[in-house]
Image (cartoon, rainbow, N blue to C red; front, side):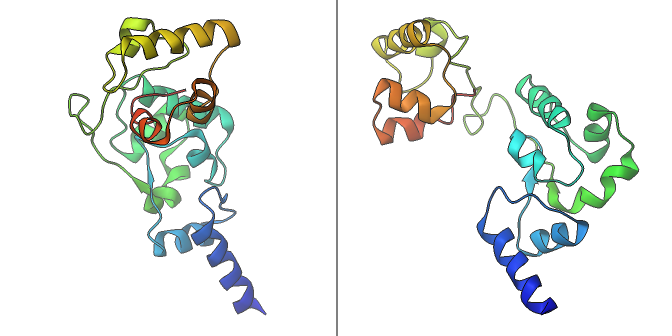
Length: 171
């Protein structure tokens, strides 16, 4: 029975990218499966997968990274959320610390379409002046965009363009 339960947990972890780990044993299973959380690209949902993380802590980390702060070690994460390093050490095996050059085309600067002006939006590759104007006008008329799916559906964007834009927008 125990073995069947462990296989079920393993399958859940492997197949559900939003599975919230309940224990350090589940973290160990995730690491065995090759799952890592890149701290400099993690979303709020990624942080909330970890046991003991609050929504407040997750938001702090995501906002810091969005603001250009790079987290280079476990000590940075601990300092940012004001917890002891000892509390985070059991999670270190699932965390990945990678450096991203903000000037590299591999890590473009992201724009928030909910606050950006037409010039800032038009600077994004693949966006014409007309589309930039449409993004701003739609936002002013119908309110903030919730995510890339909302932007796609409200502006009737094709899938190819959406797949390009998702690398340049943050919500």
